[in-house]
Length: 287
Image 1 (cartoon, rainbow, N blue to C red):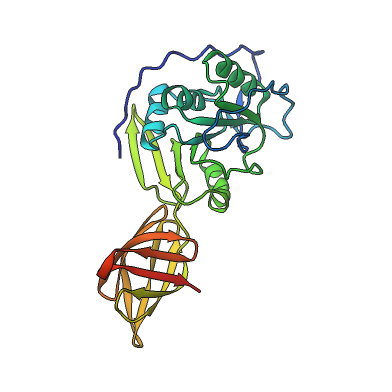
Image 2 (image 1 turned 90 degrees about the vertical axis):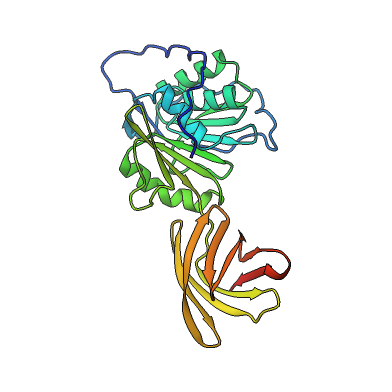
């Protein structure tokens, strides 16, 4: 994975000061972009931040900029990406993604104070046409437009969010978390930066089930796969004889496995897998 990269960025505008005493808190949630196909977000005057429907889940602690750079580097954010920051705080991640990487961004928080700070930083950083700040709850928001999701929540919130990520994010969507993991969903990689840990995942395709595999020039056989997150195992049955499926590696919609003594590499598209060329071509259909 890429090493931490220190990218010089003009400092964000200072957050507005609010009354002392109450804990400042992060929130949650993301919503769909108003534009598609890489077009800038439509200019609009956002509605004033409203009182949240429920208390924020965590206390607001900003992610250090060196960690922000690492999170955006490990996810390889670029101009074609849509970055959702769930619990955006002062908006620094989506602002940096737009300003330094050309991405579009949606930052969501439940705390009206954080919404005000984020919108102020968007306005003063010159990315108003590419970044949208929404007030809402990440557990109910539509996350499907995201190609990258960034998090700095708490372990229990990451685990609570996990089913929604699997329900809504497309295979290949990158997820990165500052400081906290996802429980028994093992990270694809971890990076240490300034004494902090960054966790990185790629959303895997769903490959569980019964498949009929047809190699080029060969006889079809069946393959049964069980899956937990990006890990899978199973058996291949050829002429009534079952053998283990080995060395399964799943990254997004790309898969490599060894079945019937042959290593297969290809892509998963819904209920179809396929790969190879010519004499090494193969296809599998689920169901």
